[in-house]
Length: 76
Image (cartoon, rainbow, N blue to C red; front, side, top):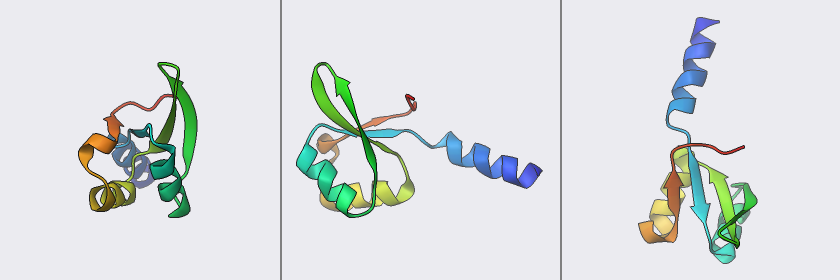
């Protein structure tokens, strides 16, 4: 039981949100198997992904760091 709890806590420690404002880029990531939720930020559509190592690798390969925002907290 403690091992499961440690794994959950460890995974949650580095988890945040990745926010894109470009629907085309968000849809490319969606086609690669990453899911997003739409959210309004300053009256603009934003596409919010859960931060994972796999997603960060894809972002690093295809987009520069100005294409997305990393938010350390998750908003439900």
